[in-house]
Length: 281
Image (cartoon, rainbow, N blue to C red; front, side, top):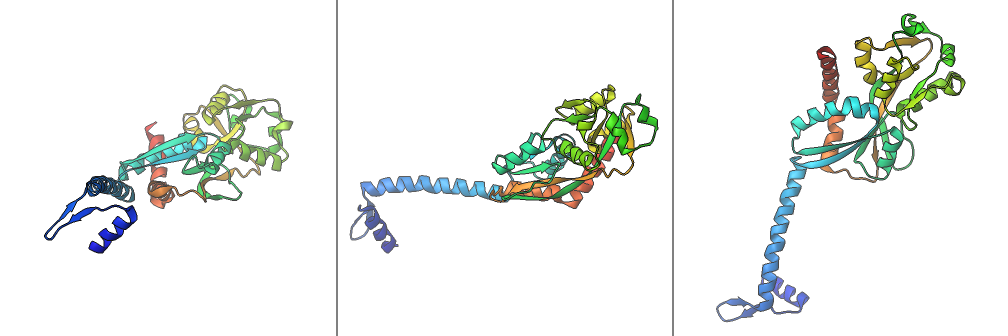
C-alpha cells in the first residue's frame, strides 16, 4: 500500500500524508483527494448498480421503427406481451413507411426496424420476420364482390387506391402489378392515401379497389364491410422484415426485445391474440 501511495504522490506531485513515528496524517492535498475520491467511489457504485439493472433487464429503453402494418396491427400486441416479462423496459414505436424506417435504421435513430420489403446494402442486416398475405378488396356493392375470382387483365379497368409512396405494401403491390403487366399507369386514376386504414375506408366507400395486408383488412372482411376477391395467377404472399444497423450496438434491452419478437412462442402468442381479437369483435 505504501508503494501505491508513493506512486500516487509522484504522479500528482504532492505530499498526501505527513508521516510520523506512529501514525500518518492527511495533508491539505490528501484531504482534498480523499473527499473527491469518496465522490468518485459513490458515482462508481451508482454506475455499477445501473449497469447491473440494464444487464438484468430491470430497466432500459428501446426505440423501434416500424412500417404502418406492423406498427398498427402487430407490434402493439407483442409489446404488451414483452412488458409482462420486462416491465421496467420502455418501448418507443416510430411508425412510418418502410423507406423512412430504413433511413432511421441507417441513421441509427432507432435500435431496430420492421419493414414490409427487404432492405439491401452495406451496413444493414435484414432477414424475414413474419409472413404476410396481401388481399384484393372491393366494396360489397362492387360487381366483383360475388364473382369469386377475376383475371389479372381485369385490374387494368379499375381505379386502384394506394398507400403513399414509401409504403412497403405499395412497393410490393407495384412490383406485382408490373410483373404481370398490370401497372397502375394503365389503370384509371385512383387515390393515394396515408395509411392502410384510410385505404380500406376509401374502398368501403366505393372509391376504388385496393390490395392491402390481410392484417389490416381482417376486421373489415369479418364484418362484411369489404369483400376479398381472388385474382387468378396472382401470388400475393410476402414477408415482413426485421432490419438492424450492423454498426449499432443496441444494448441489452434492444437485444432482449429483438430476441423476444423472433421467438417462436411469441409469434404463436401473437397469432392467438389476433384470433381472440377477431372473436371478441
